[in-house]
Image (cartoon, rainbow, N blue to C red):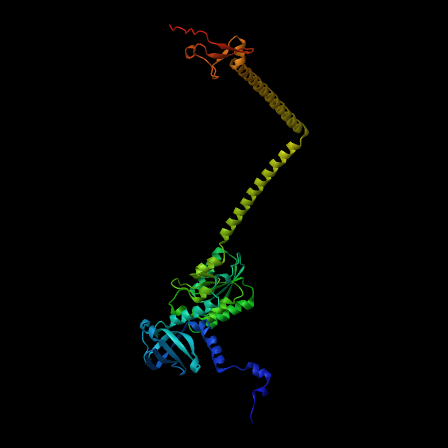
Amino acid sequence: MDIYLDEIDEAIADELMSVGGLTAYIQSLLEDDHYLQQVWVTGEVSSVHGHKSGLFFTLKDPDNGEQINCVIWRGQLPKLAIVPTAGDQIILLGTMQVYAPRGEYRLKGWQVLPAGEGLQAIRYRQLKGRLEAEGLFDPDRKRPLPVHPQIIAVVTSPQAAAWGDIQKTLGQRYPGLQVLLSPATVQGDSAPESILRAIARIARDGRAEVLILARGGGAVEDLACFNEELVVRAIATSPVPVITGIGHERDESLADLVADYHAHTPTAAAEAVIPRLADLVNQHQALIQQLRTTIQQRFTQETNHLQQLQQLLEPRRLLREITREQQLIHQKQQQLITATKQQLQLAAKHLDLLDQKLIALDPQAILQRGYAVVRAESGAIARDATQLVVGQTLDIQLHKGRINATITSITPIKSG
């Protein structure tokens, strides 16, 4: 029986996609995944096939036989620590990639390391990168420690020296403080689950204001439980702030990175969680003294201000101030009048002097005294008789009127 497209239910038709579309969708899921863009994978090399474009091989899980196809392109081969061969146990750093023409996914390799030693470090970095990408180590998500906690929870082994150090430190710094011990195994394969249960026990109890996760120093293998994802997530989801004091200073565990506060030793963790009682007393006394000083200073300031206001409001004092200001104004007025009179006198004297100078220089005044101004026909003033000639006509200006004269004789003045 033939089935035509128009007979298919519209809902099914809307969900249809091509093979290429499905492959592209799967490709985007794998290649855009942040975690799969840089992943460390360990396994056994098999089916190695060299090609001019690169090296193709299969990476097999020796425990269950599961396989994944891998490729390392030709340009990357010289950069490898080792070139994988059949039967090798390796650690491969790569990126997930989809080969669309065949609809296959494979791991594109960037680096190859021998498995065995260093595998634990690789797993540590891989887990650290994934948790860091989730934001578990961000400083912004870390909670502040309570200033004066009254109930403190401790997760550690009751037989460990760390428990004794914490009790001693807390007892010395703040006698009478309530401490809740939630026992846990802090070493070995069972430690992660044990720590998880201990933290959950504190959460259910609900009394503690802060939690200390502690262990003394030891070998790297002994501290491996603090790098387990189970423990890291338990710290991240703890309802109260967590302080780690895991007695090692060479490296930070993942538990240290996710904790709200990281101390290097159990003793340092106990010191960080609670201030010393004697220090609190000293701080309290210093604050009291500072408060007394501030109050006394403010009281003195306000008293002085009040006195000033009372003085300003006193009628007699106000009247004296007004009288004093009036006297000062009158004095300034007299000084101004005196200075103005002096300036006027000086100006009058200067004006008289200028008037006298003008009179002395006025030509009419000279003519009035009997002098005359003699001009030649050209209009030039005659000053020297030797420059004149007999018969020359002259214009003579007197004080009142003018006359014309003709030279009949010239008598030069004999010198000496």
